[in-house]
Image (cartoon, rainbow, N blue to C red; front, side, top):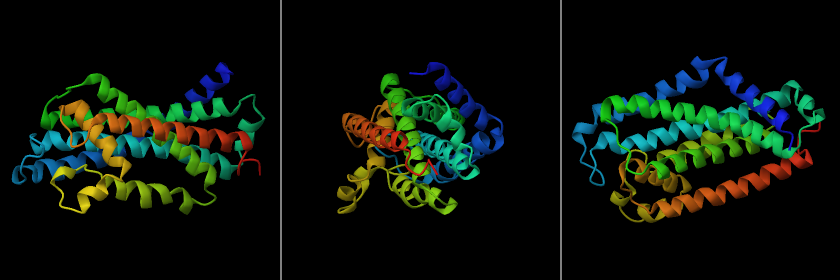
Length: 253
């Protein structure tokens, strides 16, 4: 393991998004906070309590997940894809960096950005809903696991994509629908059949409910299933990404 090269790539990735904090951190923070204000403050008083919790704190875990997952994915996907189209990817390929160093360097930067936006979203929500943290280890375990999985998925998308339209395919047509149908603004336990059963096939549901259990102490699904889902996704996506980087798929052009 080239620890010096790994550290250099990681620092480069963090500095890259910190150069434009208004675009990479502040903009998604404002967007996610607006969801909270519109759905929580404006409509929360008219909506019944969900799973025994007032509506404002109920939607906080889902919005934290939304900001964290989107930005972890976007950081790695945009960084690697831009290097591909600019032709600077060759600089990394000729450097003494193996697949593990490339994977961990890019993913580390994506995790930092995702966690930064997620935690800032949580901090902003505290102004409206107050602080609740029922299970700290479960909460931060799901935060770290989610940031890692979506950072790795961003790498896979960047390696596969050849056009800007392709790099936006996953967040637009996969992540966004599954997230909004993943129990961010509602509890799946209140859904009528067959929608309740169909929701169990959405992996986002388990991540949101796991994070909700960690923060609020209650969830519609067992957190152990969500943890297992994250573990399986992490192992599978890591294996796929390692194979792509080791083989130079669409990189050695």
